[in-house]
Image (cartoon, rainbow, N blue to C red):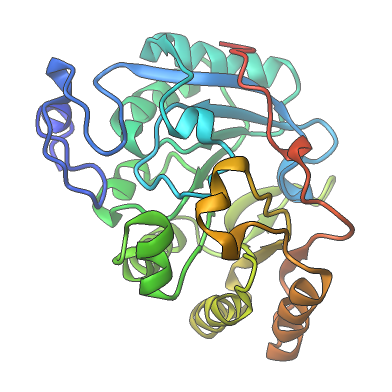
Length: 302
């Protein structure tokens, strides 16, 4: 993939829009040739091996190529909030987060900006950045695009939302999501391999953590995701099972999603994973489906 011409005929993601982003044309992601971010701050709500005690240095990018109808970051995924920054400024932000004590740099939904991010990471590393780079993704990614990050990203933190093509189409207009995510996660694992942790503090230094957000009525889909991940990777990756689904106001058009996940539904998913033999996993306890998980996109750190 020729990174010099991507933005004039953008095929960075599986949507393959082919739009001329250099001339301010916008494809499915809703973004042009200008980097936009909504927040760059310490984030404490990731998995313990990512956030730790000091927080993950989360950089939230504006725009998204998937745009799930239940998105909790809809303000930025829908392109409503975002401040323009240069690549040089983004590299500086990475360094500022490290100075604030961030355990890592956490790139949240950056797939439509990969060439720009690659340049910023290289600049930051040349300037002395030493903490790991986390790529936080929907997994609706082209393996070809992910290869541009080879050697730069230490930890991949993708979702695996759907094994059911019908659900992927209904909620994300992406019937190809299951096969696309499989290829993307395989490429992520190829790059970073099995998990490596810091023996002093238990923080992850390299590896893959695949997240699955359990949806209302989604036990069958969750089991299928677990089956695929464990049968394919075994204990070579971590699986993070999340119960924090939060029904937002506009979700009323989808009555089956207009409720929280029940305790019983989540317990069935966790029990299935344990019975399957999954040991490398993260689970959530208590009532986590609260809006406190949604940060304020107020341009902090930008």
